[in-house]
Image (cartoon, rainbow, N blue to C red; front, top):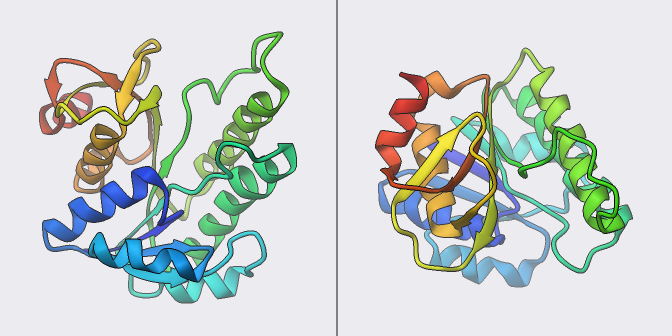
Length: 219
C-alpha cells in the first residue's frame, strides 16, 4: 500500500512509518518544517513539506493522489495554546479529510484521544479541555462523511516505554497507559482490517497480542 500520514514527524507517526516501511509499504509523511525531513528518511518515509494550517484542500489532495490510505496523526502538541488546538487538532483534521475525499482516498484512520466524546469535567485545564473539544469535533466531522472508510483510534495516556505487543482494544476500555510503540502497531494492523471501518475504538495496555486484539474486536 501507499499510505500518507499527516503529522509525519510526530512520535507515533515516526514509529508507524518505520513499521510500514519495514513491511514493504510505501509511506509518505506530511511535515511542517523542512528540517524534519531527515528523521522521516531515516524512518523509511518520504517527507512531504506542507503546512496543514495554511494549505488549501487542493494543495493537500495533490500529496494524497495515488494513496491507498491516509492516517491523521497530527496535533498541535504540548505547549501550544487554545487557538492551535482549533487550527490543528480540529481544522487540520477536517482539511485532511476534505483532501482525502478530493483525491479519492477512502481509507482514513484517525489518531484521536480518549475522552473526546464527552464534555471535559469541571476543573479540567482550559487548554486540555480545548484539545478534547477539538478532537471531539474533528471525530464527529469524520464520522459524518460517507466518502471515507474511517476508523478512529483513541489511545489512553501515552508513554515512551518499550512496546509489549500486548493491548486491550475495545469500544470502551477504561483509562490506563499505552506505549506509543503499541499504538503504532495497532494502527498498522487497523489499516489491514477493513472490518474496523466505521468503528471508534479505545486502546490501552493489556494482555492480548495486537493482531489477535484487532481480530477479536471485529469477530
